[in-house]
Length: 123
Image (cartoon, rainbow, N blue to C red):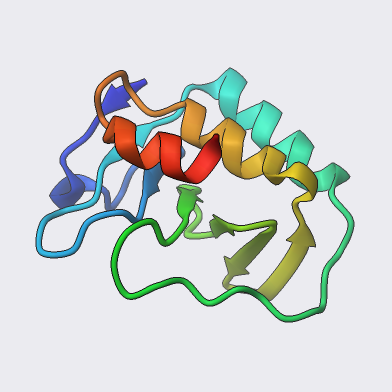
């Protein structure tokens, strides 16, 4: 996947992904290809709705990963729940086994995410 400059993420035609992991510097952001986007959207559509409580992220460290559509819709995956924000309103799905979250994180360009983050969060 192509890494992008976060200051140039508006008016894009591609889906963009990233991870909320840093404080004090920009989080990594990259472009998703069409195949990956289609697979993530299919996974989202297969996930059961969720209406329970969500785990609040810590003030520092990993706080979830995200996917943004050109339409402005944004999916945020964190610890077993994926929340979707759209102009039409929010939706939440249960992410059993953190499949959506793991698949999204795997799309990060090599070396973009610190190895200690990946080991601590997903092993």
